Amino acid sequence: MKRVATTLTLILIAAACSAETSQEPTAAPAVTTSIATTTLAPPTPPPSTTTTTLSPFARPDWLGTRILPLRPDENGEVQPTPPELQDRTFETIDLLPSPPADDFLWSLGPVPPDVLARSSWTAECPVEVDELAYLTVSHYGFDGRFHTGEIMVNATVAEDVLSVFRRLHSARFPIEQMRVIRLDEVDDPPTGDWNETTSFVCRPAVGSSGWSQHAFGLAVDINPFHNPYQKADLVIPELASVYTDRADVRVGMILSDDVVTAAFADIGFAWGGNWNTLKDWMHFSQSGS
Picture 1 (cartoon, rainbow, N blue to C red):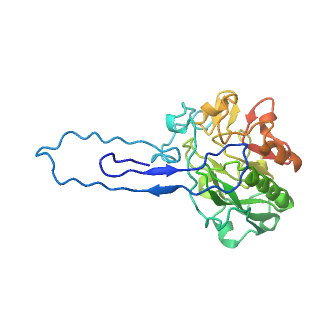
Picture 2: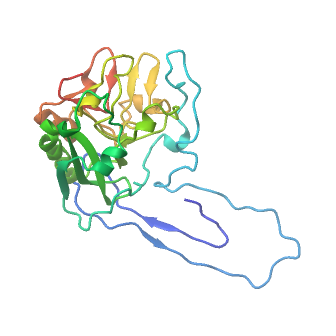
Picture 3: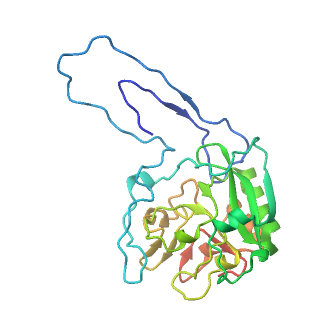
C-alpha cells in the first residue's frame, strides 16, 4: 500500500493475529482518508521527497512475477528471502464471496463442473472425479478478517478435513490464501513466493516420478511459504529460506505442539515436520508420505 505524504493519509487498523490465538470475530480494517490542498506553490517545484512504504498487509507489486533460474534438478534456484517476505503477513485476495458472518461457515459436496474445469484434474490423474469432494470454509486471514476458502479433497477424508478447518477457524490460525490449483500452474516457471493452502494437485511427488499424495486428494499443505519444504540445499518455495529457522517463531508458522498439528493428528494425518531425511513443514497426509 503506497502512502503519498503530501496528499493522502491511509490508516489501516487490523486486529493482531497469532498462530495460536482464538479465531473469534474481529473488526474489518477501516480506511480513513483525508485530502489536503494548497493554494500557493513555489514557482519551481523542489525535488520530490515522496517515499513508498508497505503496510503490514500489503502485497508487493512484483509478487509472482519474478521467474527464478532453474537448478540442474529443474527446481528453482534458492535465493535469499526478500525483506518484504521475511515476516509475511499479507491480506487475503477474496476469490469467493466473503462470509456474511464471523461464524464458521462451510459447504461440502461433489466437485462442481466449473471448479473441475479450472482445477488440475485430467483423465490421467490417479483418482476419478467422483472420488473427489469440493469443500468451502471460512478462515481467518493475516489481515484480521474472515474469508472464504476452497479446497478439493478425497471424498473419503472430506468430513475429517472439514473438522480441521473448523478448529483452525476457532483458533484464529491465519491462512493467507486457500484455493484450487489450476492445471497451468502445475508446470509454471518457479517464482518461489507462492503461499496457497491446498489439497488436490495432480502432480508427482517432489523429486519422484510417482504420484504425490496430493494427486489423490489425501494431503493438505498449509501456508507453504511460512512452512516450507527443505531437503539438503533445496527449499520450496525457493524464497522462503528464512522460514527454515523454526526457532524464530512468526505468525503463520506450524509448530509441533500447536492447534494445526493437533487437529490433523486427531484425524490420523501425519506431519511432514516430523520427517527425518527432509522437512515438509506445510504438509499433512493420511499415509504419512
